[in-house]
Image (cartoon, rainbow, N blue to C red; front, side):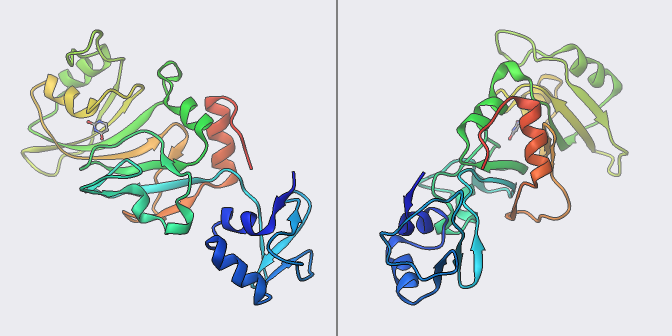
Length: 246
Ligand code: URA
């Protein structure tokens, strides 16, 4: 597929259409090692090598970022009041990106940000039951009886009980606050908070630590993101069905 050089560069996030025209004029863009004839020159991304300031640019149609959502931002593309997750990305990288699913305003943790609607659909489709694991701090004493109830399914006011969920009690280091991890395979609105409410407890802090095969690792601080590794992308697409790549 042929594409205009200036469009290609803008799609790649190198700059606006006007900025990339200037880069071309200033000889900062080369196509296969040669100066292009102009911004309108047609290139074939699969076979031509384009460089910007000496660095090769790869044409990736789909982008996949692991984002560590901080508290206080909404899992949306635009919002009138709060910061959105996309505000943490540079303006020239945001085009077409969206968060896969939602975390509450005050929830932190792993959020996949992509422009691949097929992968997003596969990860969120209710029938896929993609596991999501959360770390939480909960008021009061979470007991073995709660573990049993979570595994049996809880009434959170929906038509059906929640699907069996795996609740793990972590060592306590505070008399009135329990630390737990919880793995659920569905994504009802405020699900974790409502599950604890159903057993008379309140979630004080919530952080998602994994989604499917993706895990939040120590490389990111709240508000930071990184590209998925090729292995992470392959594993997540294998687990959720076909997706479009590169
Ligand atoms: N469950 C919740 O209650 N909130 C979240 O943000 C995610 C899961």
